Image (cartoon, rainbow, N blue to C red; front, side, top):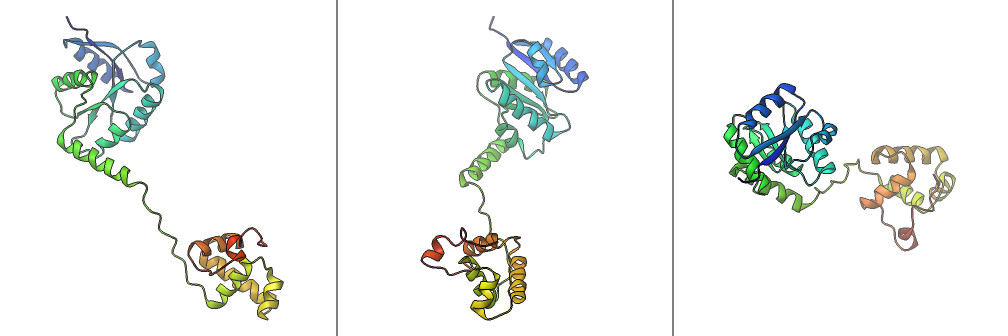
Length: 231
């Protein structure tokens, strides 16, 4: 006789574990090594080929358990049990490490078939899931989405002028002498600049202004405008 596929059951629901154990006990080619309510308890189960992971009613919880299984026992093949028919995130379970899955309402025979297919390296995958997986692969291939620059309120010509002087390392008194305005006026302009750029420090204001091309610096000013700044 062929060697049976040894399975372990991971579920927080004791009744589910016992019912599933009894169900699989009568299936040819399947041997249940044991069951556990937590990943830490699987050491007592012994060796097995396929782990059955109960999705239960908490999809996020099932995903985290799958990732934990993958991280701790990456070589173990897993079948997720009880995913809803309309679940559009089955690709997430596969990405989290699932080798196969069983939908709610599937028959015991479908479970047995899935166990054997996963053991043989042929995880079951219905056409809608293939589409979801391919879509997910396409998204990953595109890389992370581009981050749009923050929307900021336009700076006045005077504010740009002051910001350029700040970038050159000028302090408030030096700015007021350059522009022939009072120190308090400089402070008011600086406050408005920080508010419009949504930052708290002058250094950050200059950095963001450079990124958004709000400042036109050249030569030594463009090479190191931030390092020599006064806060």
